[in-house]
Image (cartoon, rainbow, N blue to C red; front, side):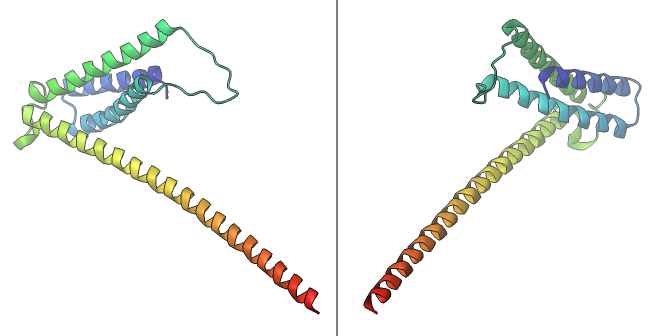
Length: 173
């Protein structure tokens, strides 16, 4: 998805979260909405990072069409600003909001730290999983090419040896 669509989705979900927490709706409903928001927010963050870090490589015969640089920069700026604003509001919910009084280490600043730590671990695990998958895929294709090449060389070598032996036998008779 593009950043604008993700931003609109995140904004809509966030509005639902705020309304649910204002009216003290069931905790499960708020957590469910927060989970949906976090999924969209992570996609938005990945999209923002991809736009910042990777130069776009067009396909060989793709027509290059550039839209307004200012509009694209503003859209990325707005998405990043809103995302940080939502993150601050999540922190506020843990520290002074409706989640501040959750039992044990789940409320207050400890709860927010735990939430951030869990998110970092999950993100790191997913990145490692993606890297492992890419490495396994590369190894598969490399091994496949190696095996096909080896079988081809052995087959052609066998045919050449067979042809040479047959030529020697036919010449000798």
